[in-house]
Structure formats: C-alpha cells, structure tokens
Image (tube, rainbow, N blue to C red):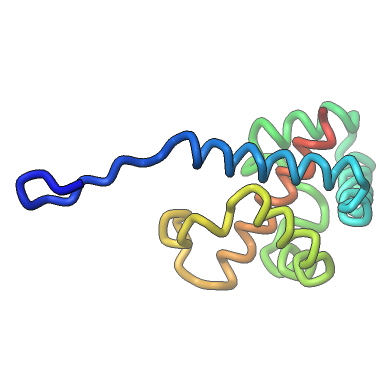
Length: 137
C-alpha cells in the first residue's frame, strides 16, 4: 500500500503466527519421535558431569540453565571451541532444531554477532537451550 509516496507494509500476522506454530509443532513432533535423542543424551551426560563436579540435582540444574543460560555453565560447553566441536558433531540435529525455531530467519547482526564462527556458537547454545526446554516439559 502506498500512502503519500511512502510504501506502507502491513504484516500478515495470521500467516506468520501459523508458520511459527507449524514450525514449533514440527520441532515438538521431532522431539517426541526421538529424532534428537542422540544430542539430548549427550547434553544430559554433560549436565551429569557438571553436577558430579559442582553438586546439585539434574532437574534443578536444567531449570537454572533455562532461567539464566549465560550464568549457568554446562561442562563441555564452556569454551567457544568446545561449543563449536559440539556443533560439528551434532550439526544435522542442531541445524534442524535451529531451522524449526526460526533462528536462521534472524540476521546475525540482529543477534549481536558479526562473524560466522560466533553465529555458529550462538546458534548452538540456542539449540541446547531449546533441547533443554523440551526436556523439562
């Protein structure tokens, strides 16, 4: 629509919400079908190692991580190089998860990152958070 020579774009909320709900449904179905079981098992193992070192309880640790992922660290996902290695090992599942939650629809600059390596790290940590969100349900 053009108003006074200015193009005005009205977002079609119904379509965007439908697409978002559809992707969330696909991701939930994939979780339920154990499509991501290998990567989830690895994350569980890393959390258990973290708890062995620092103490605590699994469910409480997961809740704490979901609440504040920047302050709660998982053993094996502390350094960027470890996160990147984790991504390389599980890249297919992580990429599918990130696609399902529309992570790739947001340009890296809007995520506060400017390099591919950093974008991969941020994406991987977002996928871990999403896996833990699904695990805690």
